[in-house]
Length: 358
Image (tube, rainbow, N blue to C red; front, side, top):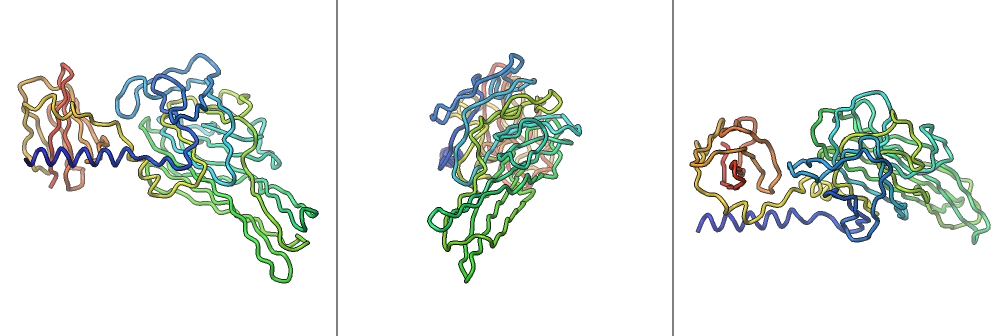
């Protein structure tokens, strides 16, 4: 009875985990041996080049991520009123001073940030992921007779976190445009742009850029901060596809999602904790093994009548924490609590048992 209850708890936990945010989700690209939009909006990618290859993802599944290798992937523009969020996983060991564009939707024609070219791009430099963004603001007053426009200029939001360790890292970036108007004898108005960047579920930086003005005349009006030009979204190059090789991100990327909204910290956590589903067969296909000592505060071993290929320690949500290619594993560095130990035999059978760290 206890084992059945534990199994049901696991299934409920995994089902809850699968509920990644889909509100205002524009598109997603999981790179499961293709470059299609798997959310159903059919904003499929087009590849330029022939060097990119599908590779192993963070869960060890073959052909479930893509190594760009100098190619770039493009799609039609993302259109959103004022806000945009993007979530993706990257794996890289590149650590140089070049500005390497990971993805972009902007009007800039090269690496120079022309102040009149609006848009955004995400880049890798010195092993650190950063965002650069330039808004166009518009203000219309007096029944449309008085119109004011201008650019905020390019502003960078850097994560200050080096990820060039050849391990998988999750990145979420949010871009939010807001406008304010206060008529108090004379028109006062402002545009505020807020940029946030998360790495591995930790908020690393927030940049708030405010443009203030008091020159509008004609009473109350309307405003429309705009940062998304009618340029393609390109992964691994700029929107025109003309960056030099040294300015392109050429390594591995996976699970890209674009949202027409500002993701919340809870949304970011859900995306970070997304994991490969554990099927019912993963629990039932092999059970003739034991783990000892359990509970433990150090090394735990597996006793089995079959040869073990590898061991994985998972959170209760199914996220892989660590692994071993031996029939034992050291969990002394883990926090106290309940985990899952999943084993795989050399003939492809799986088995899972509860493991307690104390």
